[in-house]
Length: 206
Image (cartoon, rainbow, N blue to C red; front, side, top):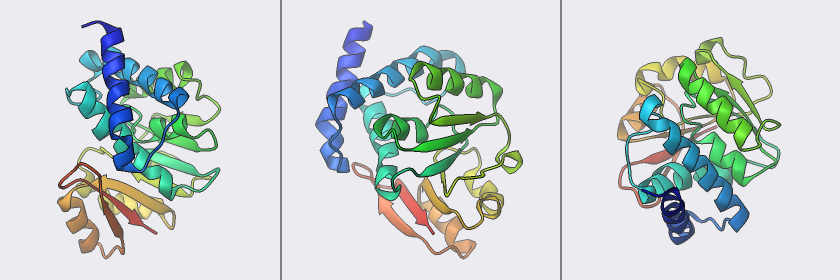
């Protein structure tokens, strides 16, 4: 499949669906998001960064869902992205807003190398710091927000993540199981059903 077709289908999906997410991205930002998508596609067969999906599904589930964070992040916010993997949700947010900063924490070395390459290729070096460690070993100094989208065994690790996060604002993506785990650990939270989804939520914990 020609890359130009892949790119155009991705861009069309972003433009068609962004209003459902309350977004109005300019063409320059969408082009940069397409650059990022091409990088993920290039490395995905070897690194398994994301599950195989259509161009439209990637645009909606991975990019537009990640960008739902933006309404919770004030100007010049700095966030820690735990289990960054392919760089989701932080890289799309950094591409959309140049005032944001992020520490991307990923324990798997191969995925860390991908994120580092992506950050360099996308011109995000001044906005992003890459840490190849378990989150418990990382220093989130300066981060007032903690986000997590696809951490392995998320609910199992939740108690440690809550302790590590301290009083920072937490923005976690997950389904009903995460809601139950948050309630079990007596966390007060707000939840937002993600657009175009039946059971994926963004949980906001002050």
